Length: 308
Image 1 (cartoon, helix red, strand yellow):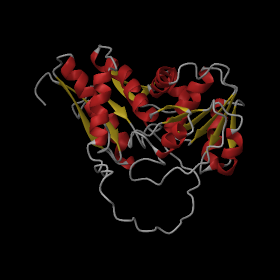
Image 2: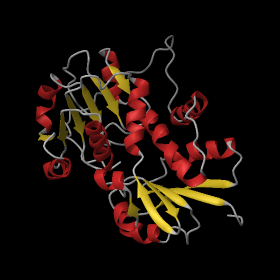
Image 3: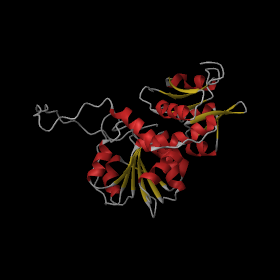
Image 4: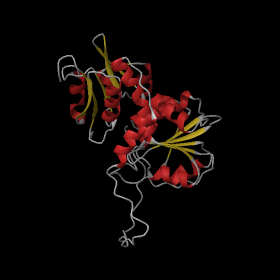
């Protein structure tokens, strides 16, 4: 890093998959800034020490992702939103004080508003899969839009119960096997687990639901998850994880550089291209493909505990 050059990073474990550097370095070039955005792979046992010395590592701020979003509250001075959510994903210095906020809330809402306008009109019931940092931001966001009931479903019921304790009586804890039944009366389903992510087990769920259900997935790699593909096959409205990733990045960039960037079609196309460039080519229709080997059936994975 040259003298005077500003640097920001994203801290996670693992972190090689993160597209945040692609997004922020695009904005840095667009605005002609002498700055750089990097990845920092920091295991859980070393996060607090690393974040507490962020400036000594040469950074003016950072994003925080899995599995550090809740731990970030202990190493910085959180604002009211981060404290209420119980997780932070953005750090910055203010008069020498390391502060923390949560931009996932506005990223989630802005993405739903853009992708599925009117999704919250008359919404009485929503289902959130997961109980980690991402799920906390989603629940907080839904309650801020006056959703009457939010059902939290997680592999570990204790973590789901912690969200109910934090957010109050409008949050209800449900079991994984209750998901299909709850979908019949829900207006929104949100996947805040890593299920369906590249390299993770699939999210296996029966979308027996009304045609008005909106489906959102926080996973953005792959761009179209199995959940989103199944929802679109049924004609349901969907919001993908890439939209949220782009929207949540806006406020962080503004905190670090004093410029509020725009989420454009060009930027989205850039990240989409990066997500899809490693996919195998689709088989040609005029070439006969060898039959795929039959795989043995395996048991369903019952839920997840994502902290995104």
